Image 1: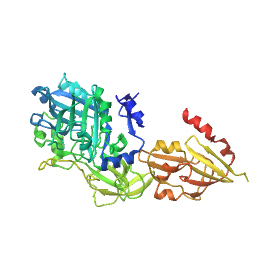
Image 2: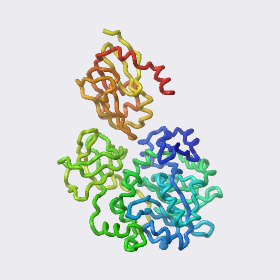
Image 3: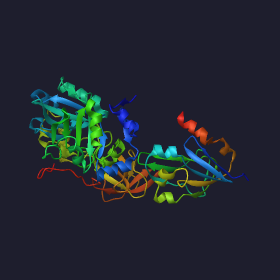
Image 4: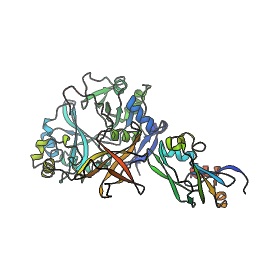
Length: 371
Length: 127
C-alpha cells in the first residue's frame, strides 16, 4: 500500500487527483489539469508538495565527510556554507545509486550536510547514509518539502518568509516561518527560478495557505512537474539515471569534481576517468515528434535501415512547444546527422533530433557564477 | 430497420454509443476523459474498415498516457470526427456530444441491447 503524505486531506479537499508514485499517493494534477498547471508555472508560479522526497541531516564532521566521499564525487570539505550542489551517490562501477542535492548549512551553530534525495531510492540511500554517519537524522519524518517554481516565486514566497536580498540560484539558508525553522533554497527542478522549502509538518498547511494568498499562484501536481523538468532537459532517476548508467554517460560530467576521479577512494573512479577521456558507449539526446504522436518512455529508436540504435527514457507532451518531446539514449557511434525513427504502436515514425534543453532555463544566477 | 433510438449506452471500456437507425455514433465517456486528463492527440480509425466488437481501433493520447478505444459492436467505420485531428481537446470539453470519435454501420444490432444503460454505467463506475 502506498503511504500518504502529511497534507493528503488538504490536497484532496483542493481537488487533487491522487495516484501512487514511488511508494506514495501523490497529487498528479488538480482541477485545472496538467497543461494549465504547467503554463501557470512558466508564466507566474506554482506550488508543488514534494514531501515524498527524502531529507536527511548529517553532521559535517571529518569522519562523516571522509566516509561519504567514497560515494559522492565532490570534495565535501570544500563545500561552501549556505550553498547547494547537484551530485550523486555512486556504486562500485560508477553507476548512479541516486542523484541528490547536498547543501552545507548551519543549525544552532552546528554544521550539517542537508541532503535531499529521491523517494524511490530511500532504502538504498539511507543504507549508505547510516553506514557513513550512524547518527544521521532523517528529516522527512518531521518536515514537509515544498517547491515553489516560476518567475513570480520570489514575490509569492517573500510575502510569507522574509528572504535575504542577495539569495541566488543554489543558495540555501536556514530562515524563520512563524518562529519555526525553515530550510529555504533557491532551486527546483522545472528550469524556472524558484525555491524549495523544508518546514515542520505542524506548520505545513498554514504555510501553503499563506502562499496561496497570491492570486496568480496555484497548486500543481507531479504531472506538470514532469513535463516542466523534461522541457528543461533535466534527468529523472529511474528514467535517464540508474545503477547501470554513469553520470558521464548521462551527460552530467559537469556535476563531477574532476580531481576526485584520480582518487581511488571514490567508487568507480577508474571507470569514470576512462569514460571522461574516451567516448562512453551511449549518448543522451533530445527528440521532438514530427507527427502528433506522443513519444513515451521505453519506445525503441532506429536508423533508416531499421537498426536498433537506442531508446527513449522519458517522453511527454510539451505545452510550450505544443508537440511531444523526449529524452533518450543512442549508441555513440550513431551519426547524428542521420534520420532517427521511433517505433510507435508498430509503426516507424520519423522524429527530429534536437539539443537539450527544449526550453531555456530561467535561473537567477549570481553574476559571474555560471555553474 | 430499427426505430430511431436516442438513448445512449455504455461499454465497460468507457465508450458511449448512440444509434440512429443502423448508424452508431461512438465516443469516450465523460468519466473516461476526466480520468485521462488533458487529451492532446487522437489517432482516428480508417473509414471503410470492418471491425468486431472489442477490437482495438484507435488511440487517444493524453498527457498522462495512451488509451486504446475499442469497437463497442461489430460493423464498418463510416465516418470519423476530423475536427479532433486539429484539436483533440474537444473531447475534454464535450466528450459525449461534439467530441464523438467515429460513426459505424452496425451489423449486429442485438449487441447494442447488451450494453449498459446510463444508470447501469453509473452503478458500474461506483463499483
